[in-house]
Image (cartoon, rainbow over all chains, first blue to last red; front, side):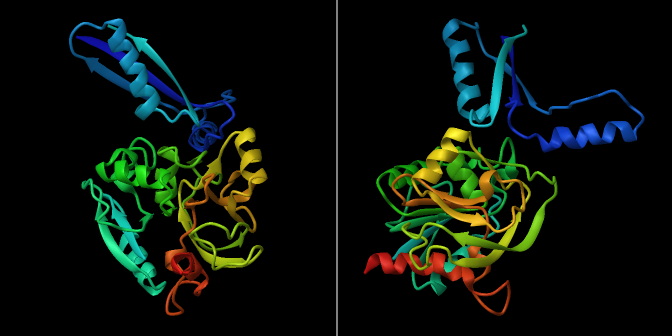
Length: 81
Length: 220
């Protein structure tokens, strides 16, 4: 068993209205000094068996094909356990 | 012509779309997301709604529905395909159209009568219109802001593939783009809903009907 995390973030040049909404809410709650918020997604994948190079390549394929939309999002794959 | 209208789990406007197809003088055929079957239709319409609850990203799950295998093959073979709203999002996720639809820049769900300019009447779905014609149809979405990189936008403009543009940008869409076509012109994605503007009884008039009568003129 292995745990792999895929983080998906909107590309820097893409407007992130959700992040902007969070940024706007923070000062209303008294939290000052935050200059930018970008909101993304985190996927935690439990992978059966040994995490071979081929399996990891497959996770990258999942991230590219389904978990992210490469037109508007970047992804990062991290093996955590 | 026989026009297939796909129903996904969470589609909302499939019945309206079928009605619009009939009022446009064509035969509407209900297609089911789970079937690998286009039932011999001549064209396909992907309707608006919230397929698969908009989980992951709008259209991201629907793009891998069984019926989409056939829709994508047929679209690449030249079959007319129109995606409205969620259907447009599905076409972008399928890479049949470039770009993507993200959350409206004002962060609210918009629901209004929206005026557009038809800029390309060479597509299978817009031949009933004149270039430069203004039409008012319904716009209703939360994630209708069209984005693409500058190179793609330039290409769309240069090839005349901007099918319709907003008069007054309602959602932050780049270059005010409301609808685009693929290179061949058979696949069109449109954010506003022409199927809600086909009768005087309800909606903002009948300006949307042209999207459904265009196919008929294709057949003759």
